[in-house]
Image (cartoon, rainbow, N blue to C red; front, side, top):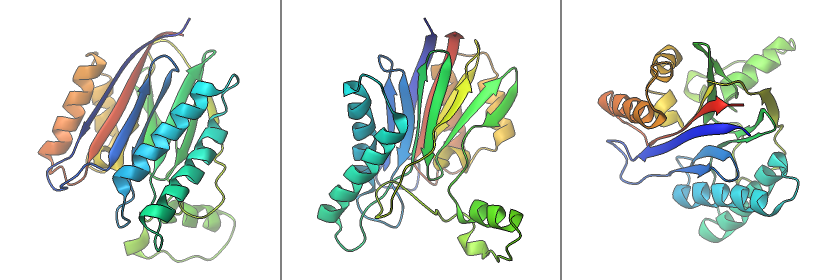
Length: 237
């Protein structure tokens, strides 16, 4: 039986008046993740909450859990809520979610929240941001001539809740003892570079202490966005 040590923490930051981040931590389902309501759209808090609630509810009632289907249903649920809260613009949220089972972590990701893995001192980002910059890189790799406006570099190409079909791929990664998995919103990743996150994760402290240190550092650097993280240490696979 896989043994996990888990913790979650969120902070409104020093600039925003409300927290539009939400986290998912369910040790019974071994289900973890974060959601970040889209800035510039109304209802960010409601979008993020509806997304994590829908994913958890779907996996709770399914005999054979399907993470991709859960995120697809979350997209529909957030979209329906957006029709009520903001008929003109809709609402939206990022969503990065993972489930541990049978020696594997399954990860689905939409937007620019991330999941990192630290293994034997090496940090790897297991997700790819759905950003204009990454879309341009993919198209250029195919030989297309595409220009990138600096102001659009970090703009999202998709999120949960907007009126477009969404069936995210699910990545599966074998899990090893002592692995660390960090789900984080961009309030963390935008303030603390990857090499510094690796140092925190590799410190040997408890998951609670590590998360507190990461968020404290983000606040010390300005805390210009909501900061949310979920941290999982694999004790045995």
